[in-house]
Length: 158
Length: 127
Image 1 (cartoon, helix red, strand yellow):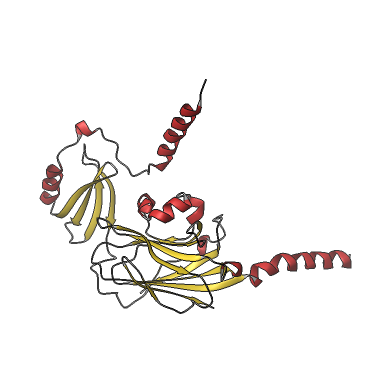
Image 2 (image 1 turned 120 degrees about the horizontal axis):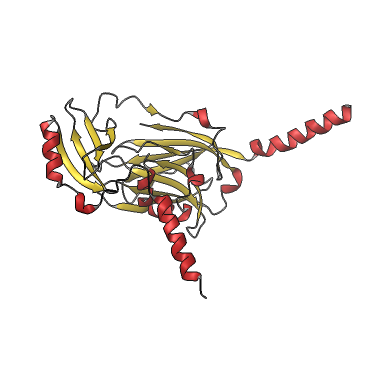
């Protein structure tokens, strides 16, 4: 009887531990320029060093029919809903800042992965890789500029 | 027999089917009315029309409704039937600029089966 309980307890601990030990809290802050158009659609996602899509972090913009304009992200994710389910919210108005805080696996940091941001605004041009920045401990807290609608981008590791 | 082209075209047909959203319009182009008619009809109802463009087969109208609210509405181009109406209160609206908006509700966290690299539901603010 005792053995059984111990076994179950051990099993539960082993199963629960990795979920806690490997997660790292990261905050991504994206400040938009005053580009003076409609709300911007953004895709924040992870690629490997060659730009190959690895996973979605956040999508701003509620109408999925416009997601194809987030071009590189759309190609990488195949616009597959399972890739972005539960990771979407409203588009971001010109001049405002989007702050996304989430839990990432520790193994994704300092392993050659890059954070990329694709942006798009209705009736204006689409920007693939508005931001490209390696996901490293060293890069945490360092602000980079975007090429398109993004004024500045910074991530912070906790 | 070479079935490759058949398979490819069949899958293309299936893919295009699933890519169409529900709020698309599918009126035959021959039956479309000029967008000026829609503009006149809306202005007669008290609208201010900024722009009408074609989006996914619908006429998409941006303007102010009779109550002065900024809206984006979609009409079917043949019958001018209203398909979708959306208030645009997230721009031009300075009264609550100082308050950060929160719209990430963790309520469906357990419900959503998702593959991917993010654990749980992110918390998101716009400032």
